[in-house]
Amino acid sequence: MKAVALTRYLPIDDPQSLVDVELPRPEPQGRDVLVRVEAVSVNPVDTKLRAPKPGVESQPKVLGYDAAGVVEASGDAVTHIHVGDAVYYAGDVTRAGSNAQYQLVDERLVARKPATLDFAAAAALPLTAITAWELLFQRMPFDVDDGGAGKSLLVIGGAGGVGSIAIQLARRAGFIVIATASRAETIAWCRRLGAHHVIDHRRPLAPQLAALGFEAVDAAINLADTDRYWDELGTLIAPQGHVGLIVEPRGALKIGDPYKAKCIGIHWEMMFARPRFRTADMAEQGRILERVAALVDAGELAGTLGETLSPIDAANLREAHRRLESGQTIGKLVLSGW
Image (cartoon, rainbow, N blue to C red):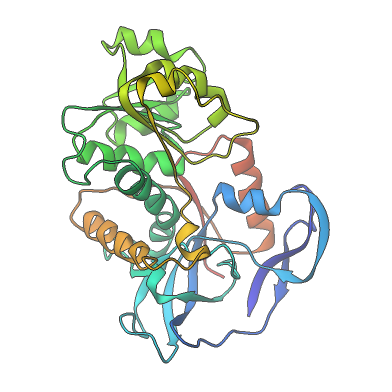
């Protein structure tokens, strides 16, 4: 099968950073399904895992943790996903990724893709949808249907992949959603997805929030830079409020006041935790994707596809990584077809 892989960890401008390879087609066993991959999307985790560092892989390493495709075969313990199903999933960071024509994935992490989306649009959703859902409704103490009623939520990094889903889920849950963006096109994107207000993350947040009538916000999710906004969020969050985080800090964070004084809850989200540690509830990720698909098909959740490149090959994946590392992408960047 065709695949895109690495053996050395190089800057993305190096043509050897991601290369086209031929690999054996895997065979499913146990609870694995074999998916014929039709489309993939790129995420920050891909660029972080590929980033320059010492070491050489003895075998080609395939990245990619968002995909949509068709189930070709299944292991003997598979129960609810069937051959021929069109599916979508984010997979498992400890296993071979989706940048290959065929991929093995545990059925508990898989769901049937939204019927109203093609493979490219479906591939844009899994990792970011699971991340936003787990953070808002499982790590933070808010109910998925009405947990935001009467509350305000600040979304730092609203036009990114996770922010694009989080805005929609939060608004559906009843929050007053304040997103951050700095360019005309990202501001428009956030408003189209349902943000009530958009403020500029390049300027101090407190004066902008005050101008909108918010002396404090009930909750915030920082999807951009944990260190940069740490002190500012401690000031902005209301007593007994909540902060959700997905980006590891570069240094030590001051966990004391005002966080302690206000009893601010700090909630970490890492969507690969369940599959990585084989938790008893790892099937929850498949269930989240089933719910997301139902919301998409009901018109309650919009896709977040920003742009599609074709075909899936090393040149286009290097370009996708380059754009993602620039920090200028809007929504999700997808590659489709072989």
